[in-house]
Each structure stands twice: as structure tokens, then as C-alpha cells.
Amino acid sequence: DIVMTQSPLSLPVTPGEPASISCRSSQSLLHSDGNNYLDWYLQKPGQSPQLLIYLASNRASGVPDRFSGSGSGTDFTLKISRVEAEDVGIYYCMQAQQTPFTFGPGTKVDIK
Amino acid sequence: EVQLVESGGGLVQPGGSLRLSCAASGFRLSDYWMHWVRQPPGKGLVWVSRINNDGSGTWYADSVKGRFTISRDNAKNTLYLQMNSLRAEDTALYYCARDADGPGGTSDYWGQGTLVTVSS
Image (cartoon, rainbow over all chains, first blue to last red; front, side, top):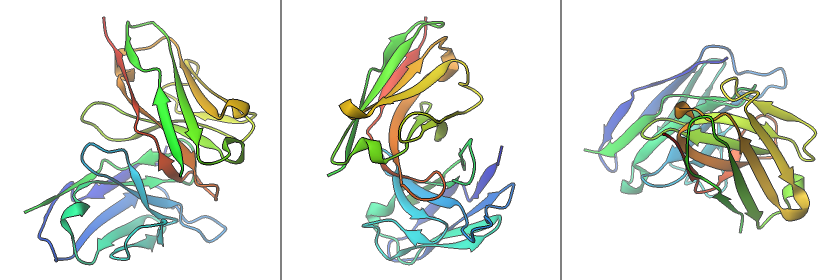
């Protein structure tokens, strides 16, 4: 199985400031079709997960452009250009390349 | 509006069975592959199973293989998860999720979940 790791696991943020989360996979997620099969999800407190980024760098429908994803192969990053209070929650990366699909442990983002 | 509503969770004894349902609306279920993902209390997300459009293809996590069965009734717009030989470690909030209909296993819509508790 592909193992996903994230850092940091906890991220206190200041509204208006940028934030960044790293995700690494134990195997390359770069497929022969040129896509990196890496998703980012946000689970806000008391809610179900919501898709933020798919194929490493594509924002899902309705996701604000302050969220961006980058990376290739085994190293990926989610960036929030200016954190807003509504961005608190747990961020998960997930490899979507092969079953069993596997999630990272999550990064808890809260306001300082 | 896409909606996924899970039901069927509850308290069950170890070794028992439950069948979860996921009612889909706002889209044609037959057009999409579907997933079940679970979240143990206070812990992270764990993918459980996937099914293709017509139910002819299914995939499972090793931890549930041979005990859980994913199925669907497209005419009823409903996804199912039959869970047998339940164990304490199956205790979790179970989400159904719609596959994003692209390459890979991305899920673009999630239900609110149904809680399964396995305990004597």
C-alpha cells in the first residue's frame, strides 16, 4: 500500500497570513498519463470532508483561489495564500492512484 | 443539488451484521462510480470500498475484504454496504462518496455519514 505522510500535523495560523502543508507519498503518484494522482480534502469541524484539490493542482468547483496545490512524484504542497477564519479544520492529502486509496494522517489548522 | 444521505448505522455486537444505505439525489447514480470511506472516532479517514457504474467491479481495503460487500441499485438510486462479522475496530462514521468521474479515486461529493458502533 502507498503510505502518505503530512507535515506539520498541527498548524496554528494568523488570519491574513499564508500557510503551507506538505504531503509525501511512499511511491510516485506521477502516472504515465502525466497526471499526479494526489487530492487534498478539508474536513471542517463537525462536517464531512470536502474536496479542495484534485490531480495535485486542480481546484475543485467552488474552491476559493487562495487555495493552491503543487508538486509532483512524491512531494506535494497545499498553500493558502491568505488564511481566513473559515479555513480551520483538518486537511488530508490522499493518493488517488491505486486501491487501496490512502490518506495522510491529517494536518489540524486552527487560529492562533 | 447533489445529495448523499447515509442510513443504517447503529449499535451491533461483535460478530453481528449491518447493512448501510446511501440514497443519492441530484444526479443519476448509474453515471458514477461510488466509494465508502470510514472515520473511527477522533481519527483520520480510511478508504473502505469502491464500486463501478453497474456493480460489475468492486474493490476493498484488506481490512474488510471477505466481510464487507459493496453493491448498488441504480434503479433506486441507492448504494449499499453489507457488513458481516463485525469487529470492534469497525467502529466508525461511515461516509458514502461520489467518484469524481475522472481518472483515479477522487471523491467530489460526500454524505454526512452514519455511525456504526461495534460493542458488547
